[in-house]
Amino acid sequence: MSLTNPTWRAIEHADEVNFSDKVLGAEGVVLVDFYADWCMPCRMLAPVLEELAREVPHVRIVKVDVDQNPELALRYRVNSIPYLLVFRDGKPVAQHLGFADKATLRALVTR
Image 1: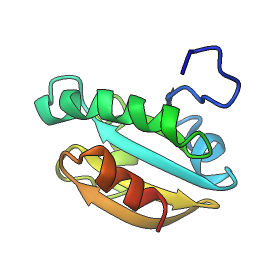
Image 2: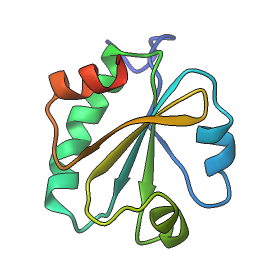
Image 3: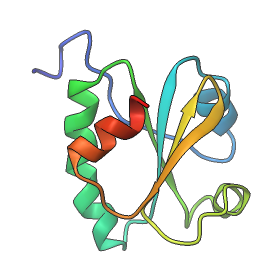
């Protein structure tokens, strides 16, 4: 799929200012990836999330840098990363700690 495909949704970044709009106020499924730039498993997860974004365009994928957004990390009790939290219509419905392959992520967002 090309980047110009209208069904493809780019991965977004959220912070403490816009998290409510991008995640809590969103309709449908949002997968939030709590990560840090220095985290090797987080780096390994990044291309998997990009593939998932192309294959499951109805799911919004939002990344939150825990170093830049410690209040969000505290609010969602992020003790280790990567930490994935799935929201459906603004409510948390599933979670996963650590690296995950694409099949695991797909199952997580389609529960």
